Image (cartoon, rainbow, N blue to C red; front, side, top):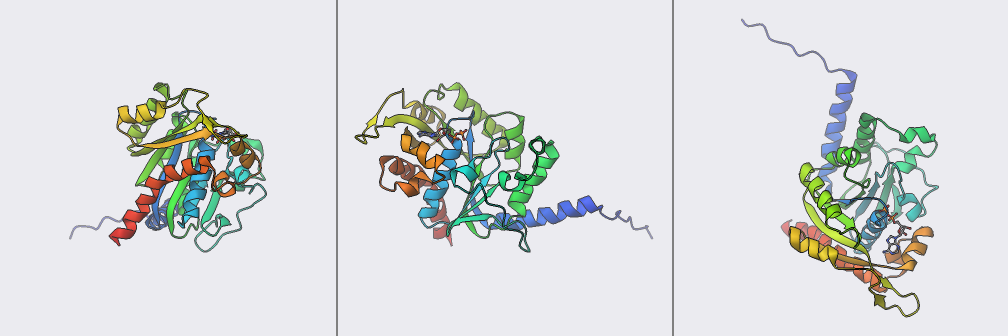
Length: 289
Ligand code: ADP
């Protein structure tokens, strides 16, 4: 009789990986849609868009998770005035995200790095990989209609390796400004998504036009429309444009999502337009069930 080949027992690390794989698979069944907010470079308003899109979806009665994995500049805790927050502990399932309101939960790399020295941020690839997996697999997100992910800017190795860990079925929302729409930058982001096999959900043109604080009217200070042109050229959806609005800066500095502070402003209407097709994603799901 042929001798049965015995597999060697799993190492502790392999067992841990297996456990995380199972938890990840379990978590992913409860996250309906993941939207990775990406930008070609920093400073274009990626985090501002991530926070306000998440808050607007939550205000539309959807269950939303906001995950900040912008390792070198996590700003979501500041934008939501959660800087002093700590992850409130662990449940049976893992880390418990911080609850911002009934419909919005937040997890940021900053919550767990708080007490560590600056050097802690200089992570090796495998450490980042593990941390981000834990944020998705081992965080107790519960049932989510949307997980909004604020990813690191750029199209280099780091965002690439982070986005490769994105849950399957993730879609990218690319944030740009009219000036940088100078084709090259957004095309780079689109190529980046292709490399990852990540579908592009759409393009947002931020800082497009200016809302006068005195009269409330929108003026086209800079060139605009580049985002829409590019969307036409590439065939991706143009989600909409957000004007330069000084109150966006003060709301951010005060740690309040603009869309909740100024629900009737034209800038909030711009965000509402942007989230309309996102809302359709969960509406379609509801129809299927
Ligand atoms: P990123 O995440 O791309 O680095 P941020 O979201 O941190 O960019 O935004 C950079 C700065 O620009 C912040 O001070 C933010 O308040 C400001 N900002 C972003 N979008 C707008 C806008 N539409 N109008 C006015 N200021 C904005």
